[in-house]
Length: 423
Image (cartoon, rainbow, N blue to C red):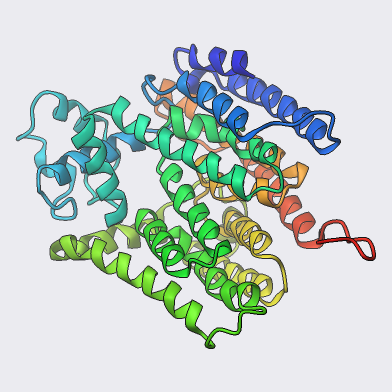
């Protein structure tokens, strides 16, 4: 696996090496599946230290590389520099500074995507960007911080998984390695805070769990989809036999969520409305690799398609909520419901699902992490000719595998315990 990651890290431009990316990552996933099979049959075991050590080795190949599959990192750097300088990133879009910045900041600005729009990233992300800029300004510094956060996520997965070795389903998966350490995506921080929420809930530390969920929402708004399930968990899973006052765990959890959101919003209140303006544009206009969306858009139009998908997601979420699933399984399924119904499905969005795979393992989940790379097919022609043309066959494969994961995960309830077996 290390040789495969080293080979990918030596590619001059992964956008132009799509076959190498797909085939090498397929080999990595095949090896990962074989290792997991050996673990499941108890042919051997892996300690938490071994999981983290190799996760670190695989990621370190990419940390110093310039991002090739995405340019989001340059927006992170721009926002971080502004916040570190005491400015409000929601005040003006990057394009307003074209004539006033020089040197390295001018280069970052030239690579920043959508420079005419105010940043879409919430205050929690802005604090993270500013921290990275203060500690080690530049691309490598921010990627190093995100990689470190991702390794911490791997560590907590070894604590939450049935056995430490099962955490390799995320820790060694090429999607996690490349999207965090190569592209430097913010999902590293999002995933950490979501997993910490689960970790503290399981230890009945409800206020701390609420702080982590609030931080996850403030890094990216998407973890709001997990909030109802986290609020449901204390009463259903943790009050048994303890006889606490009704609703008290939910109050503590909600207080943690509300407090961290309030504290993070406060410094940016002056121009926060501009953030919601960009979010509105994203919600109503942006689209990529959404298979159902493309079909519905062709039938009824963009707005109607988005409304139908939103209602579909809410219906699936309600169905999952009504079931008496373990919390890990509910989170796994609602993440898949989001992937199935979103009009915009970038490959790194699949990390939102992959972080739960070690906790609710299904072999097809490894496959989903691999097919998430297929939409990158669009990048070759874009890099060479400036032509952005999605391949709907690739999009269809991603949708079908996501649907298989959802249906199999919804149906699968795990091995039944034998009579008299200790839980």
